[in-house]
Image 1 (cartoon, helix red, strand yellow):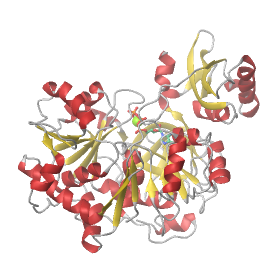
Image 2 (cartoon, protein in one colour; image 1 turned 180 degrees about the vertical axis):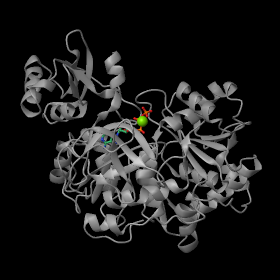
Image 3 (spheres, rainbow, N blue to C red; image 1 turned 90 degrees about the horizontal axis):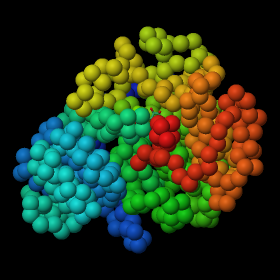
Image 4 (cartoon, rainbow, N blue to C red; image 1 turned 90 degrees about the vertical axis):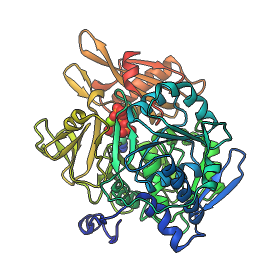
Length: 532
Ligand code: ATP
Ligand code: MG
């Protein structure tokens, strides 16, 4: 947590980690508030019809204490994996806290996952218990026979034996003291987005929450401030939704909004923001791209936004400032080691083409294949130095993959970037998205940003496709605004890249498409476009 604000350099220079000998996410985000101020508002759940239900910290503690006791009665203890297959809502928090009070490991599962995705993660992690709803139950039932480790299923909706009803369990249990945990004890198993290959389980310790705080506090502009209310449309099953917004809100006593939005709808998002006076948000770039095309209601009063997971591009930042009147601070990180580079618009100059600077408390460098730092301005791999509280403990059951992730004390992100003379970090491309064309190495982001800047472009993706002469050529896939796709627009877009970026990166081919392959986290799967 940041205690000394000032200029960006002062914030960085004065920052010290303060990791206590005992630490548990449930204690920090629920029980400590519940003891001091039990009626304090923790969560407002907004149902599909707009009806709102509130939860105080005291209520979350009562429910999670009892659910922890029920878990204990089923033999759930330290190190056991507890799956959470639920959309945003109070039950997610209650389950997280209950599992953490048992010293167990929470396995967040995206509610829209189909049977294959669920089966892979539940089997790989060896989950012992899952909490879900009626929709999830149908999927679990279909795969349960293949999951020998899965002993117990709890459901939020009425269900018949052997499935247990979550609320009945909570009411019937008698609280027991929580298991004590240290900051390095495992707390969370989050699978990566699977953008480049099969998802990997990144195991995190309780300290991962503390590791996120300085970043959030900077990106959300001296978070928390009086009157802050937080919301993210990102599912809490992803590190972004969970740790870039939901848990930091609860840690800081900032009221959190939960709402189930199966398909992101920009008008509904703005309506929710206006109605519930949401002031601080984590919005992935895909959400921002869609919101940019919607009209902003008068009552929207946003204080600060953080966004990342993909490159943002200057147009979105300008739109945020001009139309929303709020800074959009870019963040960079990955499931294994999140929030390590960011901007803080009020404290640092925002440089076009650069993400920002390393977040206080994290050491970031650009390294070569031998693990040596490359000279400033040169491209290399973005790396993060260990130890770092936000860094994962390792990949679940994959010690070789964990070992390969490091060179010396550097965690290799697999992303190419560069650092300028003032320490700003720029993102070039994912290592495997680099396009090799006529001897040039070209990153897709800059071309995509240029295309996205055209008023008739909703979303663009760029990949390299094989070419006999040039090894690869640049190919763009573009979702155009309704009714605008035409040869004229194609030519205009290619010319735009030629003029604004460089002739050598201008797409040789450009297809108009109705949709782009996205991961569940909204990232463009360039791999499937290449294979397409
Ligand atoms: P997998 O590792 O399974 O292929 P993934 O890397 O997409 O999936 P995540 O951990 O969710 O899974 O995503 C982290 C990656 O997202 C980073 O390594 C980087 O490539 C990209 N990313 C995150 N933030 C930014 C950003 N601000 N700009 C550009 N890319 C970003
Ligand atoms: Mg990755």
